[in-house]
Image (cartoon, rainbow, N blue to C red):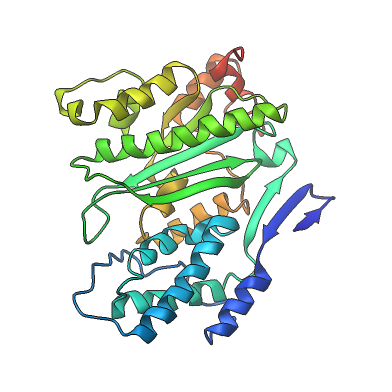
Length: 321
């Protein structure tokens, strides 16, 4: 833990653990290593051959370490850890190459950690306010064609909760996959809202950035269709959270959706780095959507002002119940 009192920042990282991991697998630290954890656009399929016991052990040891990093201080490797973890029983040569890819990525980001900020002017919003992002990748699993849900919850400029998880059912449409992901994110936010309240930081309506307009419309009861009948229960769960003022789904462009890195190996390495820097708190930026801009203007606030989203959460929520 690195605390900078002058800048009012707190950074948590596992540089020592990463160095031990690299040494164990014979990878040298290299600042010009891979730019993202996996090969761009990779989709692994089940291996039809049979991996040796030696390869299985090597693979499981590496992936187990990735998973530990992914749930502690390295959300940027969460998708890679989840994807590779599906193949531990019988890793393919391609999957083993991706393990090396992750190690080489870590070699270039050894000391990367999550930074939390204590200044409103840096955050662009009030301190101790939750904000989230959610996404899904339709049919992202190369073997089962199941989709991947991804979300991240931010607090004071850094990630505090995140997940990259293959969905349990096969979605047949993007909106369906997005709603399953939104429900997963919403359930996590209900717990975090209660926890924040226990600390004395009562939350209003939490903004959840979502890049699928259909999902946003359905969640807010602005759209109904017979095509949603087969996942109606999930739809009603998300809609209920919105109606109760617990969460608010905000339609944002895909390139501004932080959760994109939790659902796929991005083809745009620059886009990955941009989103990673936000999630890790390196560049705490809050995107101003059309919906947020409209609310700010309605409440007499200039969206271009330095304070940006200050008090927007309070306007959305009104008085806390």
